[in-house]
Amino acid sequence: MSKPVYDRTHHEKKAKGVGDPQCFAGQGGTPKFKVGDRVRIKDTPDLFYTRCQVYARGAEGVVTELVYESPPAEDEAWDNTENVEWFYSVVFAQKELWPEYSGTFGNDTLETEFSERWLESA
Amino acid sequence: MSETRDRVHRHLDTVGLMQPALHHQTHAPYPDAIDHTLFKAYTRSPHDVGGEADVPIVYEEKEEEVWELNTFVLCECLAWRGVWNAEERRRRQNVDLGQTQYLGLPYYGRWLLTAARILVDKQFVSLTELNDKIAEVKKRYE
Amino acid sequence: MSGDHEHKAAPMVEEVSDFEVLELAVRELAIEKGLFSADDHRRWTEYVHTLGPLPAARLVAKAWLDPEYKKLAVRDGVKASLEVGVDWVNGMPTGFGTPSDYCNLRVLEDTPTLKHVVVCTLCSCYPRPILGQSPEWYRTPNYRRRLVRWPRQVLAEFGLQLDPEIEVRVADSNQKTRYIVLPNRPEGTEGWTEDQLAEIVTRDCLIGVAVPKVGVTVNAKRNIHPAKNPVHH
Image (tube, rainbow over all chains, first blue to last red; front, side, top):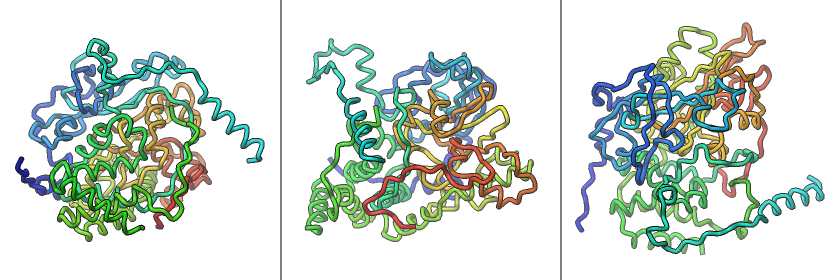
């Protein structure tokens, strides 16, 4: 097996003076969702690595912000940064997520982020 | 705390561990023993713990060890100089390490093992070089 | 489940730990192989020593005093950070942000009917450039397991109980965004200066497990697990 050659400056070249995720701005294409959209978290295969929490799968929430563009974590974790997606902040009602969540605290919510591949229209 | 109160809490902690348990041993089972639920459990990402049951504990602060700060700096320098990015580190450190080391090792113990591993995985050092270096460092303390 | 009776490891007074040995080995090898320099390590260590919760506290104090700055903080946390001396992109040796904390601070504005509290269920992501290093309890599997599902119970353990009608919103920082909480300005602070206001915005308030109170300028007292060879600041 031969030794691979790594370009250890590739991220610095892209992001210096610009920042991360700013360095991926404009590469995510047209966002599929907008603020206010009701979305459901898809439960697609997540072998080896994911940052899409299991507790959110199948749950429905509302997009509150289009936060930035970035390679999805599942790809970035292997330094595959060619495919950039829009990331969304989604708010869920806690009583939607947890069966025992008390109705007394019915206004409680949870907010977390998803890359576009994890979302579908609800 | 008085000696009696000390004894009381030691007792409560100890008897809490004395529970019957039906252990299910596993030594590489047949495929038909693994249903979807078990497959999902065994191939889980160990870091994804949100919503798992747990009990109230006393939350503490902790003094930082010199080696812990050095480890944090080591990991950030490796990313600064392009050996890896933070997401690669997290994947290796919080998932690839596996369920046992995930909960068995200290927080920064995982950072450190993961930094050692990236050097070998990306062939910046050979495993032999790493273990020789560990032996050499140990010798300095004899 | 956590909170178990500890197995007492063999005493290691004067003895170097496996972790210390490995840290030295890896650092020396990395430097020998030219992956980074000893100077890089020193510079990053110095950078880490500059970090703490004061800039975030000042951001909150400024926001309380200036409604336009508050709007900026909520709209663009990175831009607002510049006014408290924190440059998420250029303010550290990389020139592209810190590798682990990125450059997307979001300031979560509490209101009389909305209370935020922050966790990273997947690891322990934390807005280090503006808030310093995370507390030990924030990193525990225990906090990460429980806060998203039993937030009121966990907050009650921190001494915080909120009216049922208030929306308690847990922010789980699972990707590149890092959060600080902009708590409600407490009563009894009318006419206060920015410095006086910043003093009562503790790290625990900025995570969301406490609320600012007149006369309270430190985090709640907790046990501090000692280090064998502690970092001195």
